Length: 157
Image 1 (cartoon, rainbow, N blue to C red):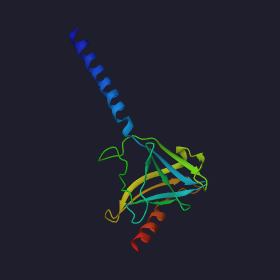
Image 2: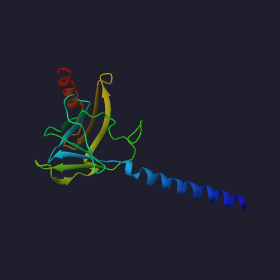
Image 3: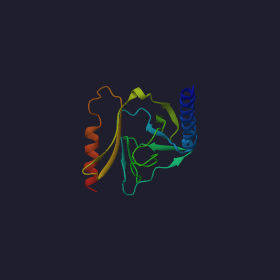
Image 4: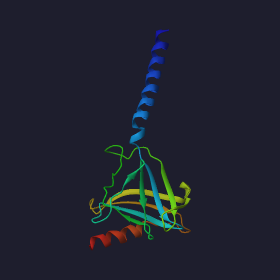
């Protein structure tokens, strides 16, 4: 009888603790929106810690990434901008959105349209780049060549 009461108390404590944790951290989590030009297909890349580039902003608990017509975003923000902790970004809602030339939402992409969302460092941590692909008819290595191109461009600055 005491064992059942003890186990029930532990389970109840864990459930209440989890709910309290979710309530406390709820306001600290950010959603992320990737806004791409309407009809964009191919590789989208974010180049972090870029000199003379605008910083990412948080508005209404949302970090918005706005890409140019080539699917590139340069930002002076670090790659861990908005992360929940030191080691990872934590749980967050992510949306991929097509926008018109004025930035107004045209449609939302399905997660099935997104391939290979990665973040990494290149050339001994000199560059922090995030990339993902929007499905094309030929999806083979759609980001590899584009990342190399932008690293060469940045090395020549």
